Image (cartoon, rainbow over all chains, first blue to last red; front, side, top):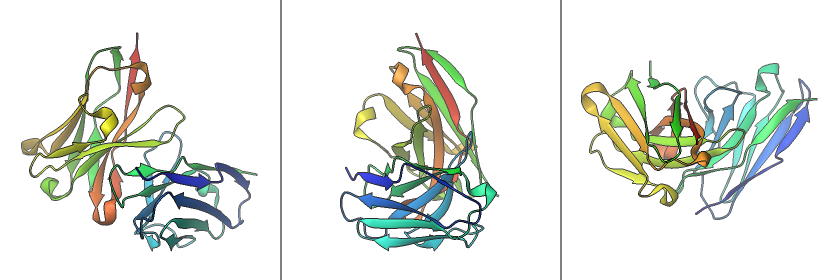
Length: 107
Length: 118
């Protein structure tokens, strides 16, 4: 199975900050990497697919990059609604696996 | 618009079975695989497996083999996930999610909380 490791597990930031979350795969997954946002009590929401493609309707302050084993999710200017937990997911091979999550909190 | 609407919360005894439904609408039901993902309280996301609504074929992660069955009824565009031999560590929110290209889950159900207690 491909292991996905996110860092950091949590971070605190302020509105307007730029933040970056990283995700590392235990094996190369090409660009088969997706990012989801989850708010308390809600289902995950797709933000980025195929490592760098922005899902329709997602604000352009979100961006993704990387290929192979190392990936990043960036938020250029944090908004109040961005405080949530973020998960990466590899879809290169089954079993599909998720990172452990990064909880983004308000500083 | 695409919607996945799941059945309501369940409370089950240890050793019992639970069957969660996922009603799809707003798209061609047989055109996309449906996957099931669970999330234990305060924990991350765990992929369980998939069903092909067109053929009925399914595939499960090894840890659930023998305990899980994913089925569908195309006449009512509904998929089901049945988990048997419930244990306390099966307490979780269970989600169905639609698969599109590149293994991406673009729509998710609202989740079904399954609580297992003795």
